[in-house]
Length: 112
Image (tube, rainbow, N blue to C red; front, side, top):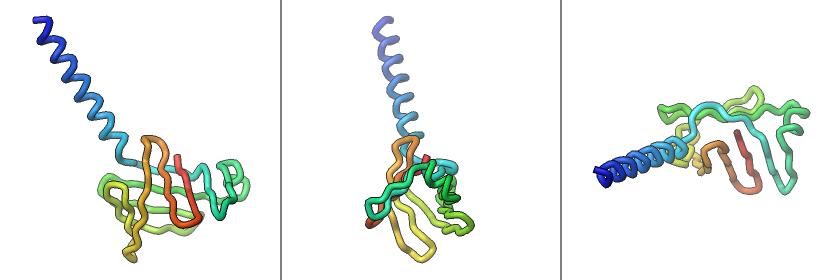
């Protein structure tokens, strides 16, 4: 009986861990830029706020999203860790459970 309980507890823990990993694997909702690095020059959340720059990214559960920079917005579709613009351009992103990171060429943007 004790062995069966241990096995059941282990299976429950593994299922919970797998569920949490799945939740952490995909972004959901809106994230605001907290760091931008362009050509080696870095702007943190405070500097972005002081300059009036508002950069955000939204990931919807239906695989669509929007990248916003002040009043401009760029819709995209996303799957896994790849975003595709309406023009067909793609960019890969990283998501660690709290931070979305976009990196292309000499520009890196971190969102939280």
